[in-house]
Image (tube, rainbow, N blue to C red; front, side, top):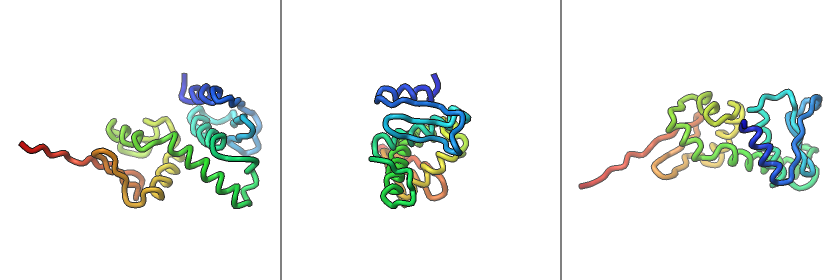
Length: 158
């Protein structure tokens, strides 16, 4: 079962139906009233990434926000995307990619089974959220020029 197929199964546990459409008027995905619609022509990896954003709409937005000229709708769009960013690529996921030898953005994206475009968006989000750095356990994550993970050396005294 692919990551995308697992996401479809997860969505169904929340009562959300998922449909893939042949003709989707230039869109990648859309959520409304417990239904996620995806462009059938996308790769499984792309559908997997888009599923998170559409689930973000399910869990965070209220009403029809399709008119993005309205400030309130744009705010709800940002909230849904931020929700999806933290769910699809958490800080620990980035550390795990580092610990598994991933050096380039391509390698990190492949390791996490996401598109490089989504990885860029997520790293940009974390850069805004943690402008200097983020520390967890022995790790410092710096998002200035993409991603840099530094492992702090632990000293033991005898």
